[in-house]
Image 1 (cartoon, one colour):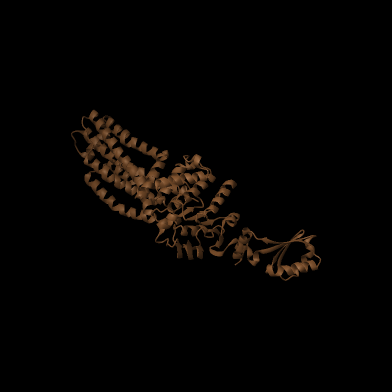
Image 2: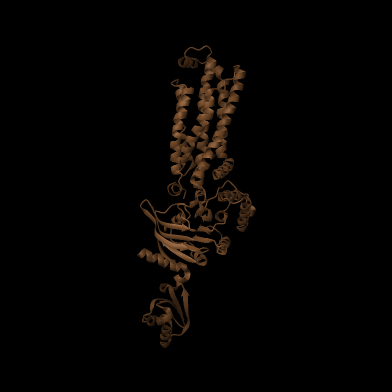
Length: 263
Length: 307
Protein backbone atom coordinates (compact mmCIF):
# COMPACT_ATOMS: atom_id res chain seq x y z
CA UNK A 1 0.00 0.00 0.00
CA UNK A 2 2.88 2.37 0.85
CA UNK A 3 4.36 2.00 -2.63
CA UNK A 4 0.95 2.50 -4.25
CA UNK A 5 0.70 5.77 -2.32
CA UNK A 6 4.16 6.82 -3.56
CA UNK A 7 2.88 6.33 -7.12
CA UNK A 8 -0.34 8.15 -6.32
CA UNK A 9 1.50 11.17 -4.86
CA UNK A 10 3.82 11.42 -7.86
CA UNK A 11 0.94 11.09 -10.31
CA UNK A 12 -1.05 13.82 -8.57
CA UNK A 13 2.02 16.07 -8.71
CA UNK A 14 2.17 15.44 -12.47
CA UNK A 15 -1.57 16.03 -12.94
CA UNK A 16 -1.30 19.37 -11.15
CA UNK A 17 1.42 20.37 -13.61
CA UNK A 18 -0.60 19.16 -16.61
CA UNK A 19 -3.41 21.62 -17.34
CA UNK A 20 -4.66 19.55 -20.27
CA UNK A 21 -5.94 17.15 -17.60
CA UNK A 22 -7.25 19.43 -14.84
CA UNK A 23 -8.65 22.21 -17.01
CA UNK A 24 -11.35 20.00 -18.62
CA UNK A 25 -12.24 18.71 -15.12
CA UNK A 26 -12.81 22.26 -13.87
CA UNK A 27 -14.83 23.15 -16.98
CA UNK A 28 -16.98 20.01 -16.55
CA UNK A 29 -17.56 20.89 -12.88
CA UNK A 30 -18.63 24.44 -13.70
CA UNK A 31 -20.94 23.34 -16.54
CA UNK A 32 -22.66 20.51 -14.69
CA UNK A 33 -22.88 21.96 -11.22
CA UNK A 34 -23.44 25.68 -11.86
CA UNK A 35 -24.32 26.61 -15.45
CA UNK A 36 -26.81 23.81 -16.22
CA UNK A 37 -28.86 23.93 -12.98
CA UNK A 38 -29.04 27.73 -13.09
CA UNK A 39 -30.18 27.54 -16.71
CA UNK A 40 -32.82 24.91 -15.85
CA UNK A 41 -34.30 26.73 -12.90
CA UNK A 42 -34.06 30.31 -14.10
CA UNK A 43 -35.44 29.35 -17.49
CA UNK A 44 -38.28 27.16 -16.18
CA UNK A 45 -40.88 29.97 -16.43
CA UNK A 46 -40.32 30.58 -20.10
CA UNK A 47 -40.25 26.84 -20.80
CA UNK A 48 -43.72 26.53 -19.25
CA UNK A 49 -45.06 29.05 -21.77
CA UNK A 50 -44.23 26.56 -24.48
CA UNK A 51 -47.20 24.38 -25.49
CA UNK A 52 -45.00 21.44 -26.45
CA UNK A 53 -43.52 21.37 -22.93
CA UNK A 54 -46.98 21.33 -21.37
CA UNK A 55 -48.03 18.51 -23.71
CA UNK A 56 -44.87 16.60 -22.75
CA UNK A 57 -45.62 17.02 -19.02
CA UNK A 58 -49.18 15.80 -19.40
CA UNK A 59 -47.98 12.86 -21.55
CA UNK A 60 -45.40 11.72 -18.99
CA UNK A 61 -47.06 12.70 -15.69
CA UNK A 62 -50.76 12.95 -16.60
CA UNK A 63 -52.73 15.88 -15.25
CA UNK A 64 -50.79 17.81 -12.59
CA UNK A 65 -51.68 20.64 -10.22
CA UNK A 66 -48.34 22.39 -10.24
CA UNK A 67 -46.65 21.92 -13.64
CA UNK A 68 -43.66 24.10 -12.62
CA UNK A 69 -42.87 21.91 -9.61
CA UNK A 70 -43.24 18.76 -11.76
CA UNK A 71 -41.05 20.26 -14.45
CA UNK A 72 -38.32 21.20 -11.97
CA UNK A 73 -38.47 17.67 -10.49
CA UNK A 74 -38.16 16.21 -14.00
CA UNK A 75 -35.23 18.48 -14.89
CA UNK A 76 -33.46 17.57 -11.68
CA UNK A 77 -33.68 13.91 -12.72
CA UNK A 78 -31.99 14.88 -15.98
CA UNK A 79 -29.34 16.80 -14.06
CA UNK A 80 -28.78 13.79 -11.85
CA UNK A 81 -27.90 11.71 -14.90
CA UNK A 82 -25.82 14.49 -16.40
CA UNK A 83 -23.92 14.58 -13.17
CA UNK A 84 -22.97 10.92 -13.64
CA UNK A 85 -20.85 12.15 -16.53
CA UNK A 86 -18.42 13.65 -13.99
CA UNK A 87 -17.35 10.37 -12.29
CA UNK A 88 -17.32 8.80 -15.75
CA UNK A 89 -15.30 11.49 -17.53
CA UNK A 90 -12.65 12.25 -14.90
CA UNK A 91 -11.12 8.74 -14.82
CA UNK A 92 -11.32 8.53 -18.60
CA UNK A 93 -9.23 11.71 -18.73
CA UNK A 94 -6.70 10.70 -16.08
CA UNK A 95 -6.16 6.92 -16.36
CA UNK A 96 -5.16 6.78 -20.06
CA UNK A 97 -2.76 9.66 -19.72
CA UNK A 98 -1.24 8.18 -16.56
CA UNK A 99 -0.55 4.86 -18.28
CA UNK A 100 0.24 5.98 -21.81
CA UNK A 101 2.65 8.67 -20.58
CA UNK A 102 4.64 5.84 -18.95
CA UNK A 103 4.87 4.18 -22.34
CA UNK A 104 5.59 7.38 -24.23
CA UNK A 105 8.33 8.42 -21.82
CA UNK A 106 9.84 4.92 -21.50
CA UNK A 107 9.51 5.07 -17.72
CA UNK A 108 7.68 1.76 -17.23
CA UNK A 109 10.71 -0.50 -17.54
CA UNK A 110 12.83 1.31 -14.93
CA UNK A 111 9.78 1.43 -12.67
CA UNK A 112 9.16 -2.31 -13.03
CA UNK A 113 12.84 -2.92 -12.28
CA UNK A 114 12.33 -1.53 -8.75
CA UNK A 115 11.03 -3.79 -5.97
CA UNK A 116 7.43 -2.83 -6.64
CA UNK A 117 4.72 -5.43 -7.08
CA UNK A 118 2.53 -5.09 -10.17
CA UNK A 119 -0.50 -5.10 -7.87
CA UNK A 120 0.96 -2.02 -6.11
CA UNK A 121 1.53 -0.35 -9.47
CA UNK A 122 -2.04 -1.11 -10.54
CA UNK A 123 -3.40 0.14 -7.21
CA UNK A 124 -1.36 3.35 -7.53
CA UNK A 125 -2.73 3.97 -11.02
CA UNK A 126 -6.28 3.16 -9.87
CA UNK A 127 -6.06 5.60 -6.98
CA UNK A 128 -4.72 8.27 -9.33
CA UNK A 129 -7.91 8.07 -11.38
CA UNK A 130 -10.39 7.21 -8.62
CA UNK A 131 -9.51 9.75 -5.91
CA UNK A 132 -9.71 12.87 -8.13
CA UNK A 133 -12.88 11.43 -9.66
CA UNK A 134 -14.50 10.90 -6.26
CA UNK A 135 -13.40 14.31 -5.00
CA UNK A 136 -14.60 16.08 -8.16
CA UNK A 137 -17.94 14.25 -8.12
CA UNK A 138 -18.51 15.07 -4.46
CA UNK A 139 -17.60 18.72 -5.01
CA UNK A 140 -19.92 18.79 -8.02
CA UNK A 141 -22.81 17.30 -6.04
CA UNK A 142 -22.29 19.71 -3.15
CA UNK A 143 -22.00 22.80 -5.39
CA UNK A 144 -24.97 21.67 -7.44
CA UNK A 145 -27.12 21.07 -4.36
CA UNK A 146 -26.27 24.52 -3.00
CA UNK A 147 -26.82 26.24 -6.37
CA UNK A 148 -30.14 24.45 -7.03
CA UNK A 149 -31.48 25.05 -3.52
CA UNK A 150 -30.55 28.75 -3.50
CA UNK A 151 -31.96 29.30 -7.00
CA UNK A 152 -35.11 27.30 -6.21
CA UNK A 153 -35.61 29.10 -2.87
CA UNK A 154 -35.39 32.48 -4.56
CA UNK A 155 -37.49 31.52 -7.55
CA UNK A 156 -39.93 28.95 -6.17
CA UNK A 157 -39.75 29.28 -2.40
CA UNK A 158 -38.56 25.76 -1.61
CA UNK A 159 -35.30 23.74 -1.62
CA UNK A 160 -35.71 20.50 -3.60
CA UNK A 161 -32.33 18.92 -2.82
CA UNK A 162 -30.95 16.57 -1.60
CA UNK A 163 -33.25 13.62 -2.26
CA UNK A 164 -32.64 9.90 -1.61
CA UNK A 165 -31.96 9.42 -5.32
CA UNK A 166 -29.27 12.11 -5.19
CA UNK A 167 -27.57 10.51 -2.21
CA UNK A 168 -27.58 7.10 -3.94
CA UNK A 169 -26.11 8.59 -7.12
CA UNK A 170 -23.52 10.69 -5.28
CA UNK A 171 -22.21 8.13 -2.85
CA UNK A 172 -22.97 4.71 -4.35
CA UNK A 173 -23.45 4.88 -8.10
CA UNK A 174 -20.72 7.45 -8.80
CA UNK A 175 -17.86 5.56 -7.09
CA UNK A 176 -18.95 2.30 -8.77
CA UNK A 177 -19.07 4.00 -12.15
CA UNK A 178 -15.65 5.64 -11.56
CA UNK A 179 -14.20 2.25 -10.72
CA UNK A 180 -15.56 0.61 -13.88
CA UNK A 181 -14.44 3.48 -16.13
CA UNK A 182 -10.99 3.44 -14.49
CA UNK A 183 -10.60 -0.28 -15.12
CA UNK A 184 -11.90 0.08 -18.69
CA UNK A 185 -9.44 2.93 -19.30
CA UNK A 186 -6.55 0.84 -17.95
CA UNK A 187 -7.53 -2.07 -20.20
CA UNK A 188 -7.90 0.17 -23.26
CA UNK A 189 -4.67 2.05 -22.50
CA UNK A 190 -2.64 -1.13 -22.57
CA UNK A 191 -3.64 -1.68 -26.19
CA UNK A 192 -2.90 1.73 -27.62
CA UNK A 193 0.07 4.09 -27.68
CA UNK A 194 -1.56 7.49 -27.92
CA UNK A 195 -3.63 9.24 -25.30
CA UNK A 196 -6.32 10.59 -27.63
CA UNK A 197 -7.37 7.19 -28.99
CA UNK A 198 -7.38 5.72 -25.47
CA UNK A 199 -9.55 8.58 -24.24
CA UNK A 200 -11.76 8.22 -27.30
CA UNK A 201 -12.33 4.53 -26.70
CA UNK A 202 -12.67 5.17 -22.95
CA UNK A 203 -15.31 7.79 -23.66
CA UNK A 204 -17.44 5.16 -25.39
CA UNK A 205 -18.03 3.61 -21.98
CA UNK A 206 -19.98 6.78 -21.21
CA UNK A 207 -22.49 6.10 -23.99
CA UNK A 208 -25.00 4.22 -21.76
CA UNK A 209 -25.34 7.40 -19.69
CA UNK A 210 -26.34 9.33 -22.81
CA UNK A 211 -28.81 6.54 -23.59
CA UNK A 212 -30.52 6.96 -20.20
CA UNK A 213 -30.71 10.74 -20.74
CA UNK A 214 -32.21 10.17 -24.19
CA UNK A 215 -34.78 7.68 -22.87
CA UNK A 216 -35.84 10.09 -20.11
CA UNK A 217 -36.18 13.01 -22.53
CA UNK A 218 -38.25 10.83 -24.85
CA UNK A 219 -40.55 10.04 -21.95
CA UNK A 220 -39.95 6.30 -22.31
CA UNK A 221 -38.25 5.86 -18.99
CA UNK A 222 -38.08 7.83 -15.76
CA UNK A 223 -35.33 7.24 -13.24
CA UNK A 224 -36.45 6.37 -9.73
CA UNK A 225 -34.88 4.85 -6.65
CA UNK A 226 -35.72 1.27 -7.71
CA UNK A 227 -34.04 1.66 -11.09
CA UNK A 228 -31.05 3.31 -9.44
CA UNK A 229 -30.57 0.47 -6.97
CA UNK A 230 -30.95 -2.13 -9.73
CA UNK A 231 -28.36 -0.17 -11.75
CA UNK A 232 -25.99 -0.15 -8.76
CA UNK A 233 -26.34 -3.93 -8.34
CA UNK A 234 -25.74 -4.61 -12.05
CA UNK A 235 -22.67 -2.35 -12.11
CA UNK A 236 -21.40 -3.89 -8.87
CA UNK A 237 -21.54 -7.30 -10.57
CA UNK A 238 -19.45 -5.92 -13.43
CA UNK A 239 -16.74 -4.59 -11.06
CA UNK A 240 -14.97 -7.92 -10.31
CA UNK A 241 -14.97 -8.79 -14.01
CA UNK A 242 -13.23 -5.60 -15.12
CA UNK A 243 -10.86 -5.78 -12.14
CA UNK A 244 -9.89 -9.33 -13.07
CA UNK A 245 -9.23 -8.34 -16.66
CA UNK A 246 -7.16 -5.31 -15.63
CA UNK A 247 -5.09 -7.41 -13.18
CA UNK A 248 -4.45 -9.95 -15.95
CA UNK A 249 -3.24 -7.22 -18.29
CA UNK A 250 -1.15 -5.64 -15.54
CA UNK A 251 1.34 -8.47 -15.40
CA UNK A 252 5.05 -7.51 -15.48
CA UNK A 253 5.92 -9.62 -18.51
CA UNK A 254 2.69 -8.72 -20.28
CA UNK A 255 3.42 -5.03 -19.85
CA UNK A 256 6.91 -5.31 -21.31
CA UNK A 257 6.30 -7.73 -24.14
CA UNK A 258 2.67 -7.37 -25.18
CA UNK A 259 1.76 -3.78 -24.41
CA UNK A 260 2.17 -1.47 -27.37
CA UNK A 261 5.22 0.54 -26.36
CA UNK A 262 6.48 3.58 -28.18
CA UNK A 263 9.76 2.74 -29.98
CA UNK B 1 27.22 -13.41 -8.30
CA UNK B 2 25.24 -14.21 -11.47
CA UNK B 3 24.89 -17.76 -12.73
CA UNK B 4 23.03 -18.50 -15.95
CA UNK B 5 22.41 -22.07 -17.09
CA UNK B 6 20.94 -23.07 -20.45
CA UNK B 7 18.77 -19.98 -20.64
CA UNK B 8 16.25 -19.80 -23.48
CA UNK B 9 13.54 -17.26 -24.23
CA UNK B 10 10.96 -17.82 -26.94
CA UNK B 11 8.34 -15.23 -27.95
CA UNK B 12 5.65 -16.96 -30.00
CA UNK B 13 7.65 -18.64 -32.76
CA UNK B 14 10.72 -16.42 -32.37
CA UNK B 15 13.64 -17.65 -30.29
CA UNK B 16 15.22 -14.52 -28.88
CA UNK B 17 17.85 -16.27 -26.75
CA UNK B 18 18.88 -19.89 -27.11
CA UNK B 19 20.54 -22.03 -24.51
CA UNK B 20 23.04 -19.53 -23.12
CA UNK B 21 25.16 -20.19 -20.03
CA UNK B 22 27.68 -18.03 -18.19
CA UNK B 23 28.87 -17.05 -14.72
CA UNK B 24 29.71 -13.54 -13.61
CA UNK B 25 31.82 -12.99 -10.53
CA UNK B 26 31.42 -10.33 -7.89
CA UNK B 27 32.89 -6.95 -8.94
CA UNK B 28 33.46 -8.19 -12.47
CA UNK B 29 32.64 -5.99 -15.46
CA UNK B 30 31.09 -8.32 -17.99
CA UNK B 31 30.82 -6.93 -21.51
CA UNK B 32 27.82 -8.29 -23.38
CA UNK B 33 28.18 -7.68 -27.09
CA UNK B 34 26.18 -8.57 -30.14
CA UNK B 35 24.44 -7.10 -33.16
CA UNK B 36 20.93 -5.62 -32.97
CA UNK B 37 18.37 -8.35 -32.31
CA UNK B 38 21.01 -10.68 -30.86
CA UNK B 39 19.06 -11.09 -27.60
CA UNK B 40 20.99 -8.66 -25.39
CA UNK B 41 17.97 -6.71 -24.15
CA UNK B 42 15.97 -9.92 -23.65
CA UNK B 43 18.84 -11.31 -21.56
CA UNK B 44 19.02 -8.14 -19.46
CA UNK B 45 15.27 -8.25 -18.95
CA UNK B 46 15.46 -11.85 -17.76
CA UNK B 47 18.37 -11.11 -15.44
CA UNK B 48 16.64 -8.08 -13.98
CA UNK B 49 13.50 -10.22 -13.38
CA UNK B 50 11.35 -8.22 -15.78
CA UNK B 51 10.51 -11.26 -17.86
CA UNK B 52 10.79 -14.94 -17.08
CA UNK B 53 12.81 -17.43 -19.13
CA UNK B 54 11.09 -20.04 -21.28
CA UNK B 55 13.61 -22.56 -19.95
CA UNK B 56 16.91 -22.60 -18.10
CA UNK B 57 17.96 -21.26 -14.75
CA UNK B 58 19.18 -17.94 -13.39
CA UNK B 59 20.74 -17.54 -9.95
CA UNK B 60 21.58 -14.06 -8.69
CA UNK B 61 23.30 -13.64 -5.34
CA UNK B 62 22.31 -17.25 -4.60
CA UNK B 63 18.62 -16.43 -5.15
CA UNK B 64 16.10 -17.49 -7.75
CA UNK B 65 14.45 -14.56 -9.61
CA UNK B 66 11.22 -16.56 -9.90
CA UNK B 67 10.68 -16.71 -6.15
CA UNK B 68 12.86 -13.82 -4.92
CA UNK B 69 12.10 -11.19 -7.56
CA UNK B 70 11.67 -8.39 -5.03
CA UNK B 71 15.01 -9.14 -3.36
CA UNK B 72 16.82 -9.27 -6.69
CA UNK B 73 15.23 -6.03 -7.84
CA UNK B 74 16.36 -4.44 -4.59
CA UNK B 75 20.04 -5.29 -5.21
CA UNK B 76 20.12 -4.54 -8.93
CA UNK B 77 20.07 -1.31 -10.89
CA UNK B 78 18.97 -1.06 -14.51
CA UNK B 79 19.83 1.49 -17.15
CA UNK B 80 17.63 0.74 -20.13
CA UNK B 81 18.58 1.41 -23.73
CA UNK B 82 16.03 4.23 -24.11
CA UNK B 83 15.76 5.55 -20.58
CA UNK B 84 12.80 7.79 -19.90
CA UNK B 85 12.04 10.30 -17.16
CA UNK B 86 8.90 11.91 -15.86
CA UNK B 87 9.22 15.07 -17.89
CA UNK B 88 6.91 17.37 -15.91
CA UNK B 89 8.58 16.85 -12.55
CA UNK B 90 12.06 17.91 -11.48
CA UNK B 91 15.20 15.80 -11.77
CA UNK B 92 15.38 15.69 -7.97
CA UNK B 93 11.79 14.48 -7.68
CA UNK B 94 12.40 11.87 -10.37
CA UNK B 95 15.27 10.36 -8.38
CA UNK B 96 13.40 10.70 -5.10
CA UNK B 97 10.44 8.85 -6.62
CA UNK B 98 12.45 5.87 -7.79
CA UNK B 99 14.52 5.80 -4.61
CA UNK B 100 11.33 5.66 -2.51
CA UNK B 101 10.68 2.10 -3.68
CA UNK B 102 13.87 0.78 -2.07
CA UNK B 103 13.11 1.28 1.63
CA UNK B 104 16.06 3.64 2.04
CA UNK B 105 15.79 6.05 5.00
CA UNK B 106 14.88 9.58 3.92
CA UNK B 107 18.18 11.11 5.07
CA UNK B 108 20.26 8.64 3.09
CA UNK B 109 17.98 9.05 0.13
CA UNK B 110 18.67 12.79 0.12
CA UNK B 111 22.42 12.15 0.50
CA UNK B 112 22.44 9.75 -2.43
CA UNK B 113 20.42 12.04 -4.66
CA UNK B 114 22.80 14.90 -3.93
CA UNK B 115 25.85 12.66 -4.41
CA UNK B 116 24.84 11.42 -7.86
CA UNK B 117 23.41 14.70 -9.13
CA UNK B 118 26.66 16.41 -8.15
CA UNK B 119 28.77 13.59 -9.56
CA UNK B 120 27.03 13.91 -12.93
CA UNK B 121 27.09 17.70 -12.85
CA UNK B 122 23.32 18.07 -12.63
CA UNK B 123 22.97 19.54 -9.13
CA UNK B 124 22.61 23.14 -10.31
CA UNK B 125 19.57 22.12 -12.35
CA UNK B 126 18.07 19.71 -9.85
CA UNK B 127 14.79 21.65 -9.62
CA UNK B 128 14.27 21.93 -13.38
CA UNK B 129 11.69 19.60 -14.95
CA UNK B 130 13.43 16.59 -16.50
CA UNK B 131 11.68 17.44 -19.79
CA UNK B 132 13.90 20.51 -20.13
CA UNK B 133 17.10 18.40 -20.00
CA UNK B 134 19.22 17.64 -23.07
CA UNK B 135 19.59 14.03 -24.25
CA UNK B 136 22.99 13.74 -22.58
CA UNK B 137 21.70 15.18 -19.31
CA UNK B 138 18.77 12.75 -19.37
CA UNK B 139 21.20 9.88 -19.90
CA UNK B 140 23.22 11.02 -16.86
CA UNK B 141 20.02 11.37 -14.86
CA UNK B 142 18.99 7.86 -15.90
CA UNK B 143 22.37 6.56 -14.82
CA UNK B 144 21.90 8.30 -11.47
CA UNK B 145 18.53 6.60 -11.19
CA UNK B 146 20.10 3.18 -11.77
CA UNK B 147 22.67 3.90 -9.05
CA UNK B 148 20.57 5.77 -6.53
CA UNK B 149 19.97 2.76 -4.25
CA UNK B 150 23.65 1.65 -4.49
CA UNK B 151 22.96 -1.70 -6.14
CA UNK B 152 25.31 -4.68 -5.89
CA UNK B 153 24.67 -5.47 -9.55
CA UNK B 154 24.27 -2.97 -12.32
CA UNK B 155 22.76 -3.73 -15.72
CA UNK B 156 23.81 -1.06 -18.17
CA UNK B 157 22.41 -0.96 -21.68
CA UNK B 158 24.43 1.52 -23.78
CA UNK B 159 25.47 3.72 -20.84
CA UNK B 160 27.36 6.30 -22.92
CA UNK B 161 24.87 6.59 -25.79
CA UNK B 162 24.04 10.23 -26.44
CA UNK B 163 26.79 11.58 -24.21
CA UNK B 164 29.40 14.10 -25.32
CA UNK B 165 33.01 12.79 -25.27
CA UNK B 166 33.79 14.45 -21.93
CA UNK B 167 30.70 13.02 -20.21
CA UNK B 168 31.24 9.61 -21.83
CA UNK B 169 34.81 9.60 -20.48
CA UNK B 170 33.54 10.51 -17.02
CA UNK B 171 30.91 7.74 -17.13
CA UNK B 172 33.52 5.18 -18.23
CA UNK B 173 35.82 6.21 -15.38
CA UNK B 174 32.90 5.91 -13.03
CA UNK B 175 32.02 2.41 -14.27
CA UNK B 176 35.63 1.39 -13.78
CA UNK B 177 35.58 2.80 -10.25
CA UNK B 178 32.59 0.60 -9.39
CA UNK B 179 34.94 -2.38 -9.28
CA UNK B 180 36.52 -0.98 -6.12
CA UNK B 181 33.10 -0.86 -4.51
CA UNK B 182 32.59 -4.52 -5.44
CA UNK B 183 29.74 -3.72 -7.79
CA UNK B 184 29.17 -6.25 -10.54
CA UNK B 185 28.50 -4.62 -13.90
CA UNK B 186 26.72 -6.24 -16.82
CA UNK B 187 27.59 -3.94 -19.69
CA UNK B 188 25.74 -4.03 -23.01
CA UNK B 189 27.32 -1.79 -25.56
CA UNK B 190 27.90 -1.34 -29.26
CA UNK B 191 30.96 0.74 -28.45
CA UNK B 192 33.63 -1.94 -28.75
CA UNK B 193 36.43 0.31 -27.61
CA UNK B 194 34.47 1.01 -24.46
CA UNK B 195 33.83 -2.71 -23.93
CA UNK B 196 37.48 -3.47 -24.56
CA UNK B 197 38.70 -0.85 -22.08
CA UNK B 198 36.21 -1.63 -19.32
CA UNK B 199 35.37 -5.31 -19.45
CA UNK B 200 37.14 -8.03 -17.50
CA UNK B 201 35.53 -10.51 -19.87
CA UNK B 202 33.38 -10.13 -22.92
CA UNK B 203 30.57 -12.34 -24.13
CA UNK B 204 29.70 -12.16 -27.80
CA UNK B 205 26.16 -13.26 -28.50
CA UNK B 206 23.98 -13.72 -31.52
CA UNK B 207 20.97 -15.52 -30.11
CA UNK B 208 23.45 -18.15 -28.89
CA UNK B 209 26.75 -17.42 -27.23
CA UNK B 210 29.55 -17.22 -29.76
CA UNK B 211 32.42 -16.68 -27.36
CA UNK B 212 33.15 -15.73 -23.76
CA UNK B 213 36.72 -14.74 -22.95
CA UNK B 214 39.00 -12.00 -21.69
CA UNK B 215 40.30 -9.62 -24.31
CA UNK B 216 43.78 -11.13 -23.90
CA UNK B 217 42.43 -14.62 -24.50
CA UNK B 218 40.66 -13.45 -27.64
CA UNK B 219 43.76 -11.68 -28.87
CA UNK B 220 45.93 -14.70 -28.16
CA UNK B 221 43.86 -17.09 -30.20
CA UNK B 222 45.90 -18.23 -33.23
CA UNK B 223 43.46 -16.66 -35.64
CA UNK B 224 44.00 -13.28 -34.08
CA UNK B 225 47.78 -13.42 -33.74
CA UNK B 226 49.30 -11.24 -36.38
CA UNK B 227 52.79 -10.03 -37.08
CA UNK B 228 53.84 -6.89 -38.86
CA UNK B 229 57.14 -7.17 -40.74
CA UNK B 230 58.69 -3.86 -41.83
CA UNK B 231 61.28 -4.27 -44.59
CA UNK B 232 64.02 -1.85 -45.68
CA UNK B 233 62.65 -1.95 -49.21
CA UNK B 234 59.30 -2.84 -50.79
CA UNK B 235 57.63 -5.83 -49.13
CA UNK B 236 56.33 -6.98 -52.52
CA UNK B 237 59.84 -8.29 -53.29
CA UNK B 238 59.48 -10.93 -50.56
CA UNK B 239 55.90 -11.91 -51.23
CA UNK B 240 56.72 -15.11 -53.07
CA UNK B 241 59.28 -16.06 -50.45
CA UNK B 242 56.72 -15.60 -47.66
CA UNK B 243 54.07 -17.51 -49.60
CA UNK B 244 56.47 -20.43 -49.65
CA UNK B 245 56.74 -20.55 -45.85
CA UNK B 246 54.14 -23.05 -44.66
CA UNK B 247 53.63 -21.45 -41.20
CA UNK B 248 52.51 -18.16 -42.78
CA UNK B 249 48.75 -18.45 -43.31
CA UNK B 250 47.76 -15.05 -44.64
CA UNK B 251 49.71 -12.13 -46.10
CA UNK B 252 48.65 -8.53 -46.65
CA UNK B 253 51.21 -6.22 -48.20
CA UNK B 254 51.31 -2.44 -48.08
CA UNK B 255 54.42 -0.60 -49.33
CA UNK B 256 57.32 -1.82 -47.12
CA UNK B 257 55.06 -3.58 -44.62
CA UNK B 258 53.67 -7.10 -44.60
CA UNK B 259 50.91 -8.06 -42.18
CA UNK B 260 50.95 -11.81 -41.75
CA UNK B 261 49.09 -14.43 -39.75
CA UNK B 262 51.49 -17.03 -38.46
CA UNK B 263 50.58 -20.43 -37.10
CA UNK B 264 52.04 -20.95 -33.63
CA UNK B 265 54.13 -17.76 -33.84
CA UNK B 266 56.03 -18.49 -30.61
CA UNK B 267 57.55 -21.56 -32.28
CA UNK B 268 57.65 -20.39 -35.89
CA UNK B 269 58.92 -16.79 -35.66
CA UNK B 270 62.69 -17.51 -35.20
CA UNK B 271 62.72 -19.80 -38.26
CA UNK B 272 60.75 -17.34 -40.39
CA UNK B 273 63.06 -14.45 -39.49
CA UNK B 274 66.14 -16.56 -40.31
CA UNK B 275 64.69 -17.65 -43.66
CA UNK B 276 63.87 -14.05 -44.65
CA UNK B 277 67.32 -12.77 -43.66
CA UNK B 278 69.08 -15.68 -45.38
CA UNK B 279 67.20 -14.71 -48.56
CA UNK B 280 68.45 -11.13 -48.39
CA UNK B 281 65.51 -9.41 -46.72
CA UNK B 282 66.41 -6.35 -44.68
CA UNK B 283 64.07 -6.45 -41.71
CA UNK B 284 63.67 -3.23 -39.73
CA UNK B 285 60.92 -4.39 -37.35
CA UNK B 286 59.18 -7.70 -36.60
CA UNK B 287 56.24 -6.80 -34.32
CA UNK B 288 53.36 -8.65 -32.80
CA UNK B 289 50.12 -6.79 -33.64
CA UNK B 290 47.24 -7.29 -31.23
CA UNK B 291 43.86 -7.51 -32.92
CA UNK B 292 41.37 -4.96 -31.61
CA UNK B 293 38.13 -6.15 -30.05
CA UNK B 294 36.35 -4.66 -33.04
CA UNK B 295 38.32 -6.84 -35.46
CA UNK B 296 37.82 -9.93 -33.31
CA UNK B 297 34.12 -9.20 -32.91
CA UNK B 298 33.55 -8.64 -36.62
CA UNK B 299 35.42 -11.87 -37.47
CA UNK B 300 33.42 -13.89 -34.95
CA UNK B 301 30.10 -12.49 -36.17
CA UNK B 302 31.14 -13.09 -39.79
CA UNK B 303 32.10 -16.70 -38.99
CA UNK B 304 28.76 -17.16 -37.23
CA UNK B 305 26.91 -15.82 -40.28
CA UNK B 306 28.82 -18.26 -42.54
CA UNK B 307 27.79 -21.15 -40.26
